[in-house]
Image (cartoon, rainbow, N blue to C red; front, side, top):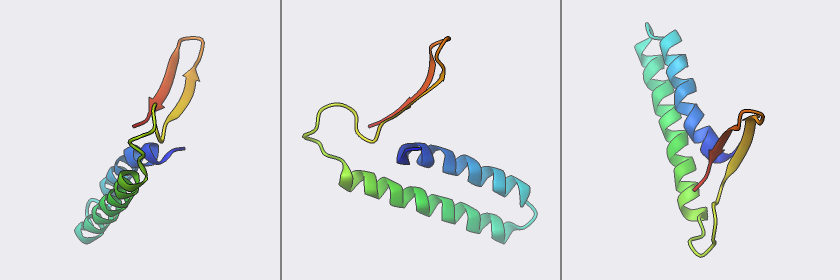
Length: 77
């Protein structure tokens, strides 16, 4: 799983955790802050690791989910 996939799925996982712990507001705030901080750190890594002189996609992920139907998951910068 690539870093972009983690950046996409981490907020969803945090939202699920917040939904479960919705009665504990301090815990919810901590989960949101932690998830946002991790996504920020990953985005800063992508910013500095990106090579503008390279052609094609960088940090790309291609997963074929249902090849017979032509369904796949593709992300990249």
